Length: 309
Image: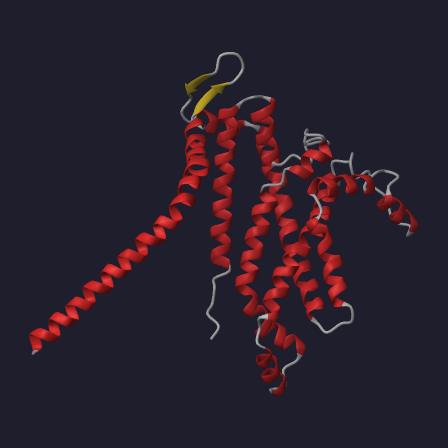
């Protein structure tokens, strides 16, 4: 009898393993087209770019590839414009990321409250996000003009005016203001969805215990928003470190005035498509990829996810 029971048990164990293998195989077969497309159009170009970063590529006349070893990377250490671009990019990210995160959270908290007309406010706040980045940049260039809307407004209130497009001290700040205004609504929607997922019973229990609004925000809202905040900061950091189109349009591709709006991605574009120095541009691209990975890992350490039971 024991042998029969053991045989039946072994049969079901083997059948379960076979079913799992069959399900796994089915899943991989469904994923195969996506894996193949991603491998051909994403994986292979990335590998090819890594290889070419160690070559000096000649694109004019007869195309040639000469192995340069680490020369492209050593050249980065001596390139003054690289350090200017990195400094501008880090300065831009250090100001824009926390500013738009705090603004997005503040707007989400306001729109999550029971205020009249909040649906209209949500639509109005979200409009900049669905507008083309190039169009927004052109609009802000008109606003930032010496005789534009912003200077007229500052002059009306008796405040100092600036040459937003031509002064190296404020040109990058103008791009920062534009991106904070246009990107924060996107993260606002993410925060708003997360706020609506927080159980109302927690706030009710906290109210019965005599908790103030600040206590509820600090001990209930923020802990529940921690995973969302990590996502928002990672996405925001990734976007700011890859700033290109606004800087390109503001400066007509030069990164001016006086390299004040030069970013690392714009510099990569200049070396790749203006100077046709593709190998060096790809070396800069790998450096940017390393910076993005390090920034993401640091944020992961700072925003450790906690289970909220």
